[in-house]
Length: 79
Image (cartoon, rainbow, N blue to C red; front, side, top):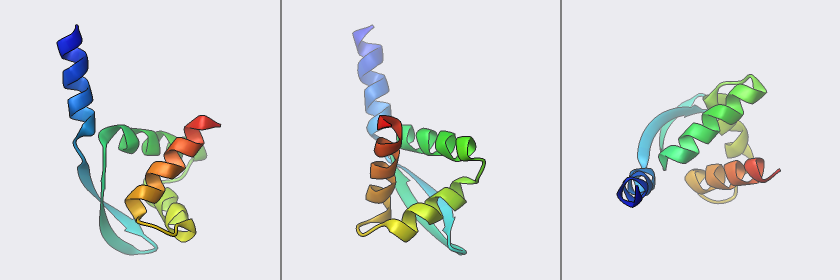
C-alpha cells in the first residue's frame, strides 16, 4: 500500500508538457498531471475549452504562465 502511494506521488510530481493556444498563439506549458486534470475539470464546469481558460488566466497573470495556472487552480479548488 505504501509503495503504491509513493509511486503515485512520484508520477504526479513529473511535469507534463502540453501545447495550448493562448490568444491565438500556440505555446507549451509544463504542469504536473494533477494540475492538468483540474484545469480540464474547471474548463468543463465553465463550459469553455482549456485553451479559453488558459487565455483568461494569461490575461490576468504577472509571472510565468505555469505558475499562474497553478495559482488559479489552487484558488479555484479552495473556494
